[in-house]
Length: 339
Image (tube, rainbow, N blue to C red; front, side, top):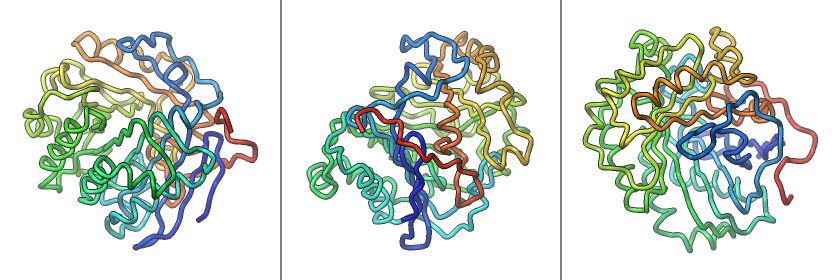
């Protein structure tokens, strides 16, 4: 294992069945620092997020695993396409990443909430092992605890997808994921990466391999009402991207869907392609209009902004050191309470 210390935890890479995968094991600041979401009671504008301490891992632990060796998608805002694609991570690969991530904090034997994100490398909807592994974690809780030494009160896996056009079984995968969500008291997140509502912009940013919003809407119109939190439309926002709130509301029911806005991140691909959220880390100004527009048509809207510690630690989406993202490794202690 090649382990990198970052301010909020660890980023590591290791060899698995088909080569190297990259994984995160980190703490979380908590919503009061990173989030503006009026519907949750967090109403303060995010005019920069301080480099503060994370919550204790006993309260919340975030682990992000890779689901593929590289990625078939060619998104122009992501460094993962620079990694040679070598197929899906196996069930054992996913479990090994999770166990290794947990082993980095041996002093933590219990957490109230474990967020497991399928989001580091790869498009998880292509990998059948993601559904198999998620079912295993819910159905074999005692075995998981015995094999990792970690007791988890609430397990919350999150699947993030950009809806690849070439994936003819994508619709079925999403319905299967939602079935797992609703069987387990809603404790699964579904996030669809939208970024822009303009077809031409989406064609460029997703390398020509994303379904149109109209097609996504048709395929997912039959989703049942979500238990617990709503399904999420994610806008990784560049100042040049178009967000037509009226169009979003016509295609996606605000009773089922919420919207999340976050800055497009400063990875190598974005810098090379001139993609950025101007003022996105220092001022709430870039988010004010899209947030208000989406709220006006009935959506719950969550704005998430990372700190520079989190950005420099490459915990944000689109980053991967295997694909060229530049890590500012921390030499000091991790900023996690209780360690």
